[in-house]
Length: 320
Image (tube, one colour):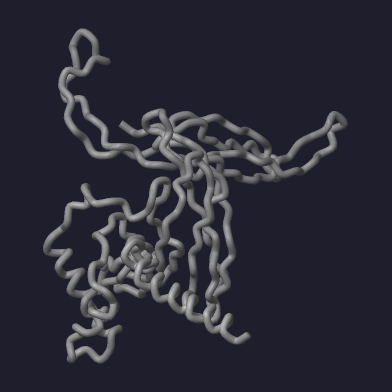
């Protein structure tokens, strides 16, 4: 009666031994760390000025790697065996290796044109979060945005607002994470158009000294490089009804603002004498400023009964 369970046990042990010997020959084990390590944060030091003592200040703002450097051929066990004895731990070894890699990269800039993208099709390596650090420099306080981590993010086709988290007052009792938002979307088929913010909002930050306002993106649209956005102002307006009764109300005026940047343009060095609009010789010129092109007047009586005129922007253009 006891021979059947014994035979079954022997059979299971035999199958386990055979599968353990066969599977590694036909199936390559997956290394999830190696697969996901392509899109990661890299050190990127930026000189931002001098501190109040006159010493130079360099900040590691970070960057998200955009290309892979190839699969890792050595195992972590082999790497651990080759750790230099002067390093206290594996962490110290990895830190020193990272410094050496950054020094080598600064001397030899690699050509990433033929390397595979770090993320798959329809994805790109983008920051998952950014923190804002305040650094006191000789010429005043400066805010520096620092990338904390990176991940593979889906490329959005339509122009739309997507979340963008920023951490303010990092590692203090006033630490706050705000979704400031950003615009994402493929470039338009029309040349010169891109996905840009057209409407903004604000978030309040509490600090030990005062309450600060942080601008956030609310709406995104496809616009040209130089474009107009709404900007609302309120004014007191004095009106009279048919019976001559005086009324005071708020008047809302969209005065507008010009946003965006103009691409590098050309300057005309020689025009045709017969036709001044025809340019005979062009020269490369610097980028131009995005400035108001058209205006309209808004006239009303203010609360003191005086005539007031407020100009509002109707269109913007690149200044020639």
